[in-house]
Image (cartoon, rainbow, N blue to C red; front, side):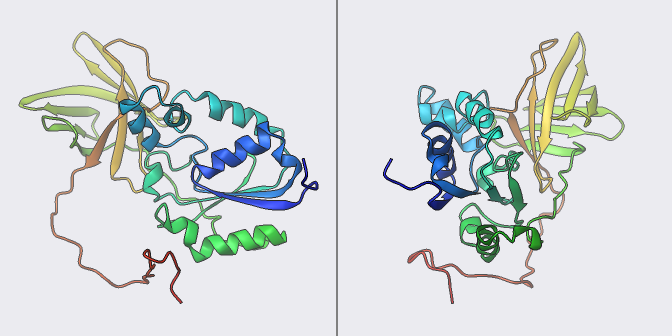
Length: 276
């Protein structure tokens, strides 16, 4: 109440993004904020919230950063849609914090910029992020091409996929001829499958004897991770990928990559300083 109107520019990182959005949407904070910059925020949840929710199902915070049914995020999205506040989001499709949910930090009504090959903490301290922030503050973001390039997400599930979290070796192979081979421990079966990529989340159905498993799936930006969630036999198709089974692409070659050619940047994590 003591602050003059439109007095500052708000910059938030990670879960601070949700705190900032609550402040502005529900506590009249937008009266005092000229512009908002959100860096790597879980605006559509994070799989880390899902995993934590398994161990602590009653924890409100974990529920509010999960990727499933999320009343807080739904409410914020409804409130923010009518806002005229200039907003910039900055994220990386290679941020492990959002594996399989790389689009989570983006907001439909904001200026969204994507910086590839940055880690979760790296995106906050990168030179590209600083460049975008300064341009947005100065009102010249349209003149900056950084982060405009969209990285297409692969959507074909072909290949051999392994679930390492299972007590027995789970392996699933989607052949291009419409046959899927499923290996669970010592049991091996072959069935027909169909998939479509025309829906919001790609759909995949496995036709087994006595019925069909209806599912949804998603590939990571890097194409080496598959999230797959199937219904019970003849059950209803899942609505979201929360708690989906995670598979990793099996690589034929085990030769380590020893190529070191490229541009590298060192960060002094002990002092939290960028190098000169």
